[in-house]
Image (tube, rainbow, N blue to C red; front, side, top):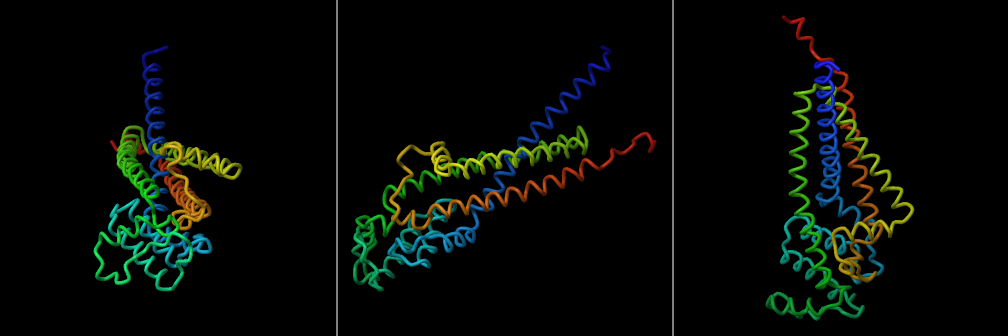
Length: 277
């Protein structure tokens, strides 16, 4: 084996290793982009809650459940403002009380003159209400866990996304557009393949997938609630299936775009430097 052959093989290995690393980083970023597209916009939560929230099992009507679902989403993935969430709960419960819809046991005993009531009086009433009317201590603890997981994951995934961008630049600069195109197409293939496996798992055993997914991030028993609790009425099973569908569609869309860019990149012919001399 000649020295040139050894250099070519070493260069080929380095190129393939860079392509593989770039593909993995881009694949993770594509999944992350899909998550951001479904989890952050208020409109997605509002649309799915409007369609799937179970007002028939709740003292709240659908409009109130949607409003509470959006406020809970804001608390979990954005502001983490407990006062804003409590204010939303109070408004919804006042509407229930005024319309005499508080027939389910556990309604908060809110002061009749709420405008002059102290925050302590309101909090006392909400803290002693049933889980059908408020997000109780267990529900809030779960939302706090979700907030912590999402915040930590976003920090890590932001770094991964930046690393993916840097990797794309390095692969393109050192190995050319064909290598970059191959990495992008491989990334899309990895994601589509992974999502296909997950989709089959969900179709065969949704509860098994749901349990396995939660067990990755939360302790057992901290994420199960009564079927008629406020949390489940806002976010029933069909809500999460819908959220998964949005995540899937958003991620597949980014994969298609990534594939198109990869095809275009691979079609670009390297410039013949010798012809310009």
